[in-house]
Image (cartoon, rainbow, N blue to C red; front, side):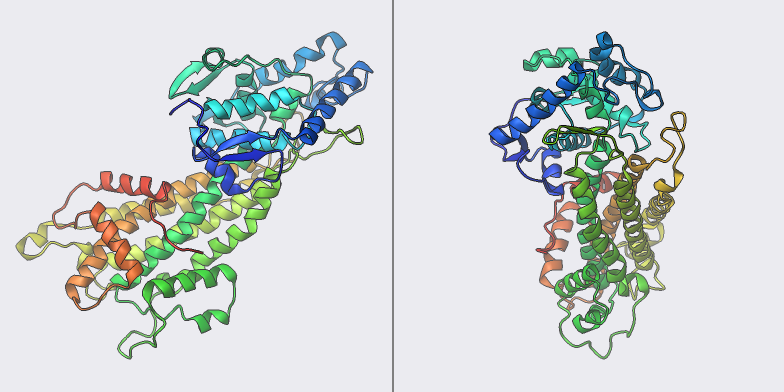
Length: 518
């Protein structure tokens, strides 16, 4: 991890226009950098909000979380001499996170999401705070954020406390791959710790940045998985000597779900199936092949639906209270509630797990000599006397079944497990952050399934070509098969496959294959 600024990367402006999911993912993946707007109107709006908060405090105005305690303690008035200490107490007592740490990529996504929201100019924070978050991203100085501890309403309080603390030189961060005290890391890159202004602790923590940042990454991974599952299906139709005409354009015009239609069109292209079917082809394949557009298409259509939900949340002011610098009004509300992200992630993880299940069923057909139309049992390429002691993909199929089952188990909606917390002040909560973490876990398992199916498809296609030398692969599949053959030797003698599977998972997460133009 290189902490040096990268001026050569394309800059994505924050504060000038709404950001798209793909832009957050590009910054999080180290393929782009943030540039906070220096537009005079933007700067003036931020400064007006901060000045209004200071003026209210000076005039003895009552602002929740600024001159009062937090949550159920909102009736507690803070003595004026202690108002400036309150934000530091907020991130201090929320330092109780647990579980795995967010990855560097996830952490960058969280920082971007928080910066975008605060840059709306409705949070009463100073320009200096925004510049500090920009500098953290610029230097790849990343707070170590525990993933667990948020109920997804009143914001991602506990995980975001680690961002607030790091900005102020407290707790630990990553810098160039090294774990350091935040104060030391700030010194190394020439930054000073912040002293938060009265509204700024609440503005940093009382929002949906963790769930939204994770949702952006989940969306991009799910979109690639949908395309990859389509290509894998095409390879498996070929490997199993299936009917390539289940994806007829006229057939799908009769049930025109857009995502389903896109998947069918991709399969037609992959399989060159615009010709009439041969008489000798089976009329109907089993559902995991024939109905692949109907399963993958649900994920495609879910992506179309949840994109708007995620991008609206990303580009919203979602802390409380909001500070309207134009009307000079304090607006007490509940925009920290992550219900839309919870719905998006609960929905998406369900559609993703169904795709994993589809691929699991395709593998079950391929390895079973009763259903694979001539392929050897377990897709073993061993021949002669040694065939008796070789087992092909027998164990891989068992592992895929385990991964799929675990993915399916994770699809219980997190949002239905709302818990009343904090003396019944937070008596209905979204669980959006848990839903986002669940979605990422389902993706992790589903990518493992996809990796195993790439290995199986490579093996199955080669064995089909051995059986039917004259049955040529259509061009898109031929290119994919050639690339897979470079990565994976044919499995003739039993060998441990964990290294190859891990490499395939890494390739999936790096989007190694360019799949479809649309």
